[in-house]
Image (tube, rainbow, N blue to C red; front, side, top):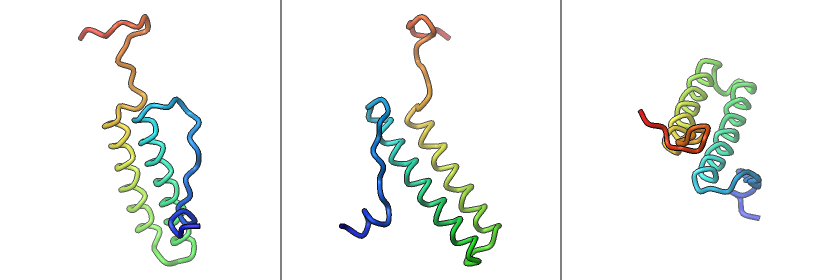
Length: 86
């Protein structure tokens, strides 16, 4: 087994298969792994709670930006399936 596969395993994706969903899922899994590492470092006293908070904040902003760029959760069509006119 490859070292990276062992340290950073990827879960299988079961959602609606669209390129943007797959990219976001990969980013979400990486986010979760990094958060776990930060929590472990803080719990073991290797970094301060403030450092952990700042690192989590940066990762959250990156994930949020990715979601916005990929337009995850946005519906360009109205309830009836027609395109919204603004």
